[in-house]
Image (cartoon, rainbow, N blue to C red; front, side):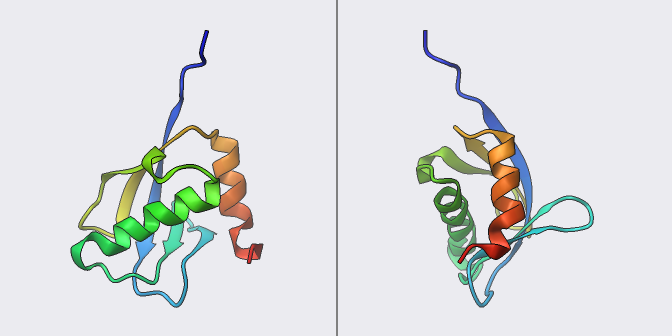
Length: 98
């Protein structure tokens, strides 16, 4: 019997036009912070966020999707195929990974 895939939703605060793509941790409210080089035009920053998360989590881009916030800095992202503990570990240590 196959295991049921779990989907996790996280809140992210996106900063477009940053100097580099990174996940520098969480803000005071507990929201994940994300910085991407892409501009917000034509959804490029959103796509860069999803690609960054997929790459850092080691999963396919198709497993990461934007649920809400397409035109706002605050996003809700749904991630399939990883545990919440893995996501927390990646966010916590991102600043040290180069």
